Length: 362
View 1 (spheres, rainbow, N blue to C red):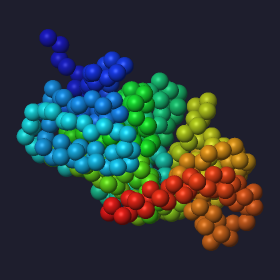
View 2 (view 1 turned 90 degrees about the horizontal axis):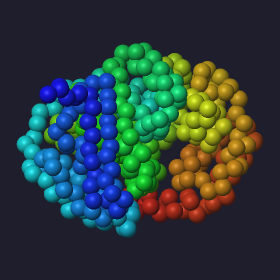
View 3 (view 1 turned 60 degrees about the vertical axis):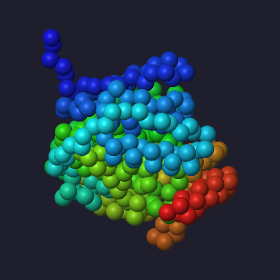
View 4 (view 1 turned 90 degrees about the vertical axis):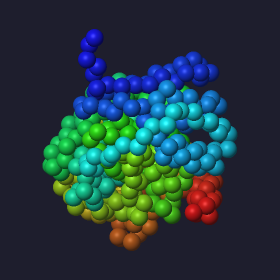
């Protein structure tokens, strides 16, 4: 009998309306084979499909209890989701290892967490298949090269994981609003033999938090006895995080934020996210020093964003205040940022209403 490859694993979702779906993971380190990660990976999908969760692998009581609380939060955000009954044998708790991991894409949030917790973190975790498509090897190679260089300069061990999980989940659960925190948790739990605590860099500041798949109220609930998940960075807005990393030479050499990813570009410099990031770097006098962006800003593409997302509106509001506070007199940039808010004020009103509901629940 051949020796199993412990650097690969996967699970199958059965009973879905479209039939079964199998997800695969492979990494450059051995992966945990206990099945603890499948609860996080499958639960949001099953809540959409309306199917109960019946597991062949035993699950820890702490994981099941956390998943039950996670269901309550997700259903509060989206009442159309079904309550899932979780059926599994009970697994005994395990002992955590001492390593501390941090998800690291090379973006603003992950650089902020990696630099802030540099003395605690032992491993950085890079995933292909989430923001970079599993089959986009050209962009993945460029992004990985930057992350590898950053990890070396930071003195951290880099763990790389490839998975087609998002290719499956996107058919069922919206990545940003509901699913990606569970996906990150699934990867973290697979690394239980290497890290006992895993940092998930936050997207939003506490006061701006809206329903989002990775959230301060949600991420810790996917923890087990062996891996504790920590949502980090809610004390600062994204603009403040950029300011905090803008003087760090490692960040300025390797910062990657782009989601457009046209022609394998590291940062396109033209999408909304690139422009918003460049605007803050300019406000802190660091744009010309950042090797991964153009040295000047053309904000005109912001006019093509017809229905800005809540996070774009939140970001634009913060950046405008920053530009004013730091005396940046780029009229075109300020006009185009205001346009993100003016074109659909209902977006911001909705974001505020949900944020206030979350505050009341706290």
